[in-house]
Image (cartoon, rainbow, N blue to C red):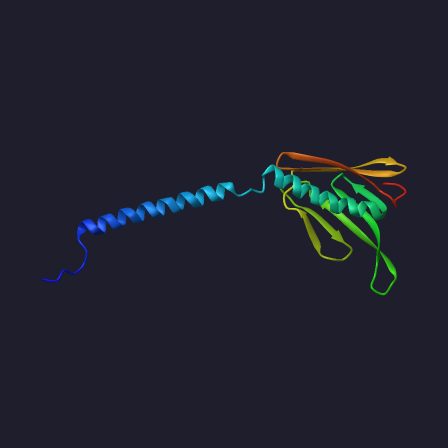
Length: 159
């Protein structure tokens, strides 16, 4: 007599082994996802904030005129060289709406708006001294605050 198919014990054993394998895979995926850095990880927040301040500091360094509005909007006039060898003045605006969780944005002239930081808790720009002018910026993300200062080499005053 020829035997076709599997016995009930063989099926139950294979389903048990399969269940153990699926459980082990799910556990591995859970552990791996916990090991990934989150957007609120302290190192990630510090790196994001530092990159944003570096962009702002580069603009401040070469700005010829600086205007701070409500501490959340920084407007700078920057001379930019064009392709034909002439220079034109562009307005660079760095601003935050003031609402927790809103992004910090940078716009240069009529160009597209660039995202500096996706979610900001607090932001404050302050003009420190008149000669030489300096701008202090405080950016807070995820409970971590960075306070930085930049000397403005081309600007005479801060308004």
